[in-house]
Image 1 (spheres, rainbow, N blue to C red):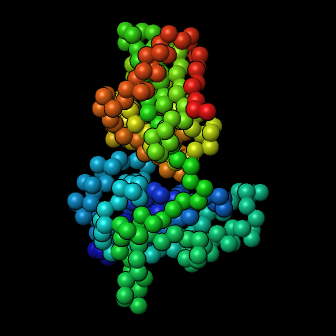
Image 2: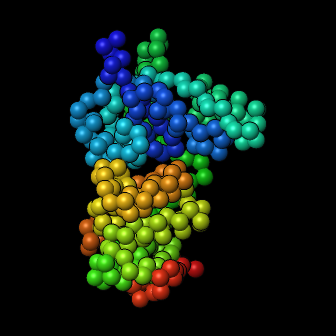
Image 3: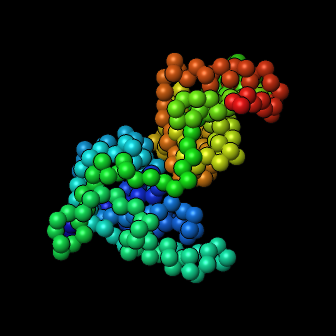
Length: 286
């Protein structure tokens, strides 16, 4: 009973790993559509303080913690036990009974399409797993389409004439598209949020399902991660818009970078200041 008090659940969905305190919270991560990424669920009994600090540094979100598989350190969760999870009933017409039954088998019984999160121990009596960094790195998501988004906002007067700039790059750093939008009169923080929204909407329109977001606004990055509270109503509404778009990605990461590393987006934001309110310009690679 004492052991159960400290129990936690590790959920792998696509290339995102979430840590939860109860099974009900895990339930929401299991999609009812066969198009959803494969899900694996494991149970642990002691989350070390060092592990909590490491996960916190990677960003506190809707789960107790979430972390990208690429950021996983070997052995961070210790020993885990594979945990079957009931599949939610899909809405009418969403999937056929046959498809739902097949997916339930894949998730609960561990068939060939279910992604393992670690390696089995030699103990034949129980299915113990130890999270192994090398194994996690081998896991992949079907139909992966990823990009990098750099964003920045500019305001000449704060508030004053403002613009939003966004630059989308492929994983190898090559240009996908430069975006800028005129915002009329706005504060710098509003411009920063509008820049994120501009880039995310474009990425979704182009079919990207994995995105790494970078910007020099610490306020935006921390609020979107859930580490800082958005006390201003306008900021809160903009943050909620970003989170709604965030949920449309299989993998989403946002991090703060120094201004010197964000010069491309900064240039677009400054050009956008001269655009009419709501005017959007695109310069895309051919």
